[in-house]
Image 1 (cartoon, helix red, strand yellow):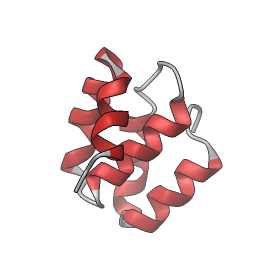
Image 2 (cartoon, helix red, strand yellow):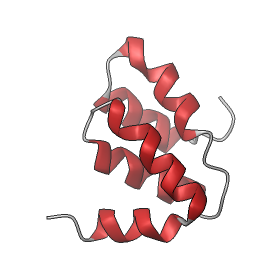
Image 3 (cartoon, one colour):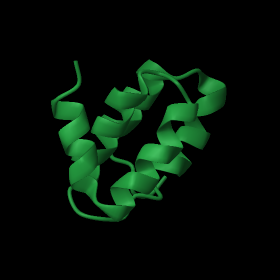
Image 4 (cartoon, one colour):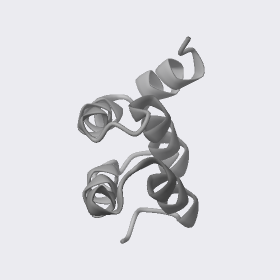
Length: 76
């Protein structure tokens, strides 16, 4: 799938069931802005394996990716 690096795919495979992986990759590929791999990895970190927690961060990242970076680096 374009827009998804091997590192991101590996994380998807680790965090999500096989039946969800293509959907997660498709959602992450909607992020088209700067620092793509870093932001996609942070989205996966914030989602913690929860499929429903992937789409909203992608939308936030497309508005301003720095929010995702801040949330991921400062989560408790």
